[in-house]
Amino acid sequence: MEYLNELGFKIKKKDIVDGLKKVKWEGRLEIVEENPSVILDVAHNPFAFDVLFRELKRFYPEKKINLLIGVLSDKDYRKIVKISSGNCSFAACVKPAIKKGLEPYILRDLFMEEGVPSECFDSVVAGYDYLKSISEREDVILISGSHYIVGEFKRNYKIS
Image 1: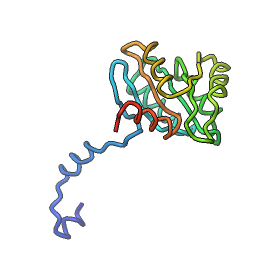
Image 2: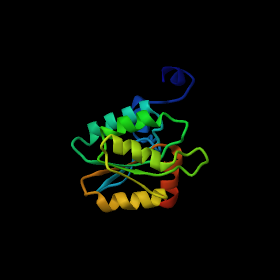
Image 3: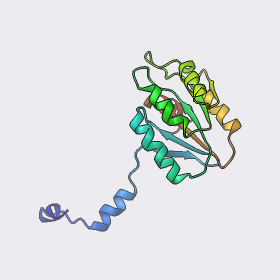
Image 4: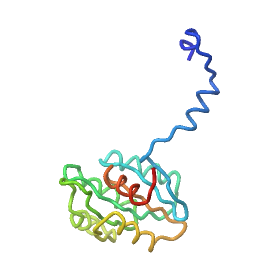
């Protein structure tokens, strides 16, 4: 900031702070609806899922999380399910609309092995509609697993 001021730019610390408050990173803990809270996150590897659930616990302690998930077959989906299983109440499994999308029954079976009720759905829309029907106002619906899943949700629900 000092360097820019030396160059003739008049930038105040308050301007930077105000600007940072307005920064939005789409697809990262992006809240698109309330009651229940609908959150989009493009987490697609174990590290990102670990961070995601840690943050959700911080912001939504004691809330039930219903997960809509679809991942690519080249991701470490076993670890992703292991991490997610300890944090979600239900998993709606879908296949990303891309050739290397993982078949949803693979995710469903892994979630079931971990004791998490799960179902397969033909589309993000069908999975989301089901989660809306079983979620209470105070619950969280998390849509995650890949950019493809979050993108499909945004296209179908006109979220930009």
